[in-house]
Length: 339
Image (cartoon, rainbow, N blue to C red; front, side, top):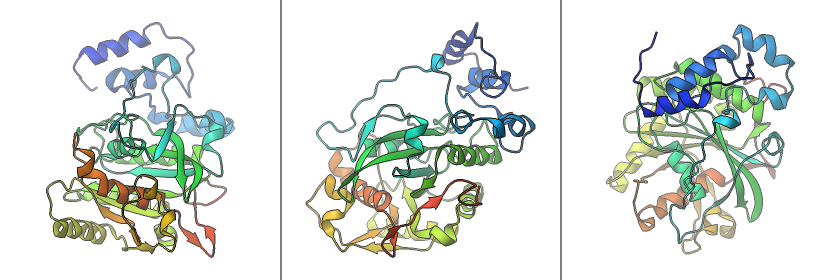
């Protein structure tokens, strides 16, 4: 039995669930309640794929219902958060749209981006930068701030056409409340239930890549068939604050070597179609790299992070085409056996 501090956050969560009704084995069971009181997560490991309860019920549920498993808090437990602009005088690349439905998520024309990385690597902070709003909770902690697989939606101009975008924020690897296997299974199930295709998979890492982080990243590379869809993968080597350009490049090269990433770039034929031109047309971009080193220190002025932000936007939002057709990663069993 785990012991934990009865602090103000725990007391608040206890008050919120006291007297709750509408018990559901799949969506509102006792493990959901216990984990929510303990750490704020509405998660039941008994509902992970392969577990008896999951396999008993999930396959007989409609897609719209199974997509809710281990993903969202009951609406009565949702607490309003104030969304603030990060840089008031600057444009956002993605215009935030509050809330999303299963219809929005399953749109075949949506541009879907999966963000993956260790706890505390800055996934939520990068999502906030792309929206230029504090849509996601962000902090450097041992325990993952992202409590569920969370989907943030909006509209972005991709190749000068407005596209519906889903940015998928995930629980960090090596989370202190869940085992690495549980985290991986939860992410896979959420992607499978909510999306038909993924357009980009973005891995974030920084500093020395620990063996557990390497193992988790390579597992996802295997599941999502990096060998076949390598041009749909982006590697971001972050927290390069204060490093010289030479040291930054060495860091990303070392990360590629450790993880087995092949360095790839895309030459731009039509510079006016470069995604970051939406934010600034001052700089001509001729080559886009999909392995980048970045520094986004909290509170930094826009001038200090703009170059790295433009590189991030270009790497993440440049679609990959082959023979004139967009290449997308299938995310469902019926489309591909990776899940």
